[in-house]
Image (cartoon, rainbow, N blue to C red):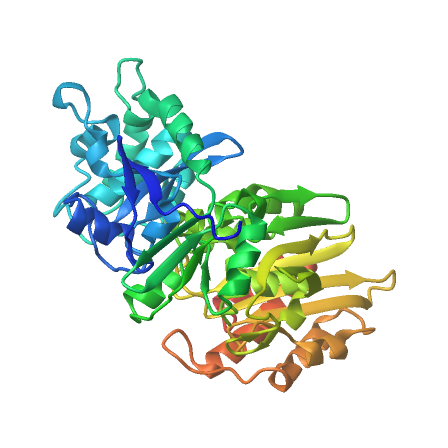
Length: 494
């Protein structure tokens, strides 16, 4: 590379190509749209990716194909837009001033009252309209998880989605489909720019074009903030007003967005989003099918990455406990080479991981679940969808021919400063008969591994009780005791 950088962030905004040679690494797309371009359809509600009022679509090339996804512009940084197509609600104008079918359906179904949230709902529904011509009610509700309406109620909006899905005559104008081939060509041209560096008032951002470029830049700037999805780092800026300079944006690196599969394991690149990973993980590890759709809203899942969820070391990250229970490993890379370690050893203490400043997370290796092994994950939060975890339990169990515990891994999130295994409980169960009495006796050992804190999500007492109850739930489900599980859930195990 030798310092030969492009000096502009280039992307397409609706139908116009934009080139920026002076932009702050902390500049969000929402602020730029509203303040610099006066495109005020996108609203700021929460500034943390929860309410969806700021939703736009981002088109990007994935293996040569142009894919559009809904994202939260309030936590999407401008530096991450290089080589993308940004589509705002203003772009949905139809022929002769006619509304797009999604917009018209919102009108016909009375899907708006005060209207503040409406542009965000329209863009989420538009993203669904583009990809699914016959969405189920469940799929519609999933597409709207990340959009909050305070006054209309969701039933008219769901009906609007159902109505819009049926309106697809050839003469309906759609701004994306009408220009898809041209946009794909233009984005491919931008991709040839190579690595980008932009400076602004003493701050710097980098967009590496290759893995080796990323390693070189991070080697030269070991204290840089590496940003993939910005679903966490975005809040560092919008809520905590932290400096993140310099920033390295890696969301464009296709080499980090691959998933490979063999008989023993799957390898997930650090840049793979929750959305991209879902189909593979549901096929290979079905328990993820209930977990991943509860991480944020669809906009967050389209941005957030599993590698980022691991790299930031949050004690309430949703995927690390499940990956630890599966015996996953993490691959780290730098200019000096690569190394691999067990994921459970990666987390050292709160805010501290076994990763040198010049290293970055390259991939995660997730072992397959052998036949005869039971693997389950349970997430507990105040509301079911788009909420932060209070306690998460992941359980991996193999019994021998005598129904004794041959292998067991229990991992929890929300119970300590890091996601970690309940080793005392494991030791109490290992080699013992898999019975309710033994499980309950072993659960009493949880306080040997965890001293949870009280916060606004849950008290320490609630967390400990819930962690024990989740182990009991795992046992009951392993025995097929559905009626007993219903009684248990209705009582102290809620």
